[in-house]
Every structure is written in C-alpha cells, then in structure tokens.
Image (cartoon, rainbow, N blue to C red; front, side, top):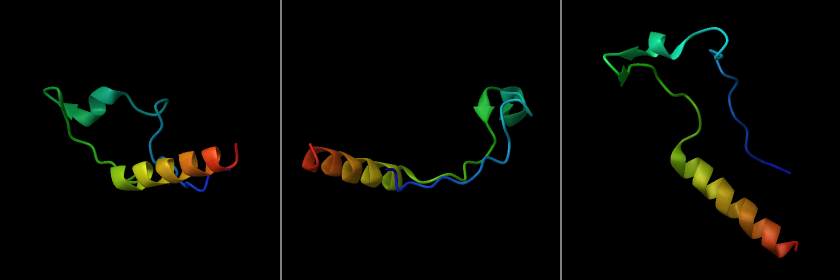
Length: 54
C-alpha cells in the first residue's frame, strides 16, 4: 500500500558501530535518505487515503 521508496542502506548496523561515525560526540556521517518534506507529504497523503477508504 505504500508508495514510498527508500534507497538501500549502504552501511548496516551489523557492519559498523556508531562510534565510527562520530567525533567527540558529533555525527560526521551523511544521510542520503528521503528528506523530511518527502516523508511528511507521503505520510499526509497516506492518512488522507486511509480515512477516505474507511
């Protein structure tokens, strides 16, 4: 039912520890997933469809 597609993760938790992505407690990695706006818009559309079909 979901139209949301997410990219495949390039690093899984089993392959690396979080300490490899931080320096002095600051995250130094990058995020290549969908932006917040994309997630919020898809969530709102999903909720609208859910209520319309109820």
